[in-house]
Length: 314
Image (cartoon, rainbow, N blue to C red):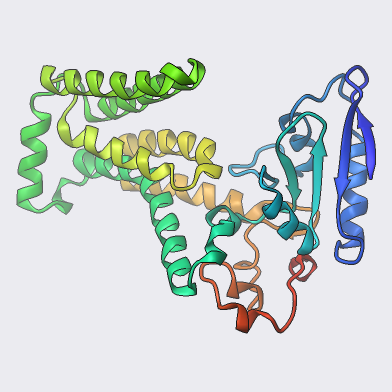
């Protein structure tokens, strides 16, 4: 279906769905949400997505995007609704579930056991990216008794040369990384990548040699940042959460990490759009849908019936 949104831009929006698969209530609710949009212009997916999300604050977005036609087709077959915006190479997909951020269409080209391995690598990388710097700082500052004598001596030897606190050191390295990354993105492609690599090497090497930053801290931050690239769809949320967990761990130790982690978990569990829980099919638990979430069964076992999102509607 075609519709026009934007008083001035008059942007064409295409509503895509399969008539025999989409839940009728979901389709009606999305049309009502689009009808309430009263913007002068719509130039990208970011203009529309807030109107399609029920909560004003969500740690992770409950609407998905994709630029691959094969991924979009697979979502439509599952009974989802997609929005195509004129001039935008991305499609909005509704609804989206948290576990889908760790799945790719390439998983279905692999053997089930390898797809299972890759998906769990992504889950592990996700937690490493968010929690590793915070755990390092909190244990070093508040719970050194958790380290064995060898690790403790390495940490003490590395940090005694640094002129600033461990928390300030971690925040400084993370912010400097974001500055270098943003500079690489905004520069022309011909020089952006080179600037990021050379800038990171020069600044990192100089910071360690001058004693401003310890080698363990630089290693921890580099490992956390690299792990975040494994789940690019969640990169924005991971970046902010990494900083928040680092501050919480530095100020309150493991208690601060647990407190913030509980708040994030509550937010994820409370996220629900159009009657579809963001945490489905894990919570509420759906056994049939679990065969293609944290692991993937073979196609022989999945051919007994097609999955539609209506099965996960509350």
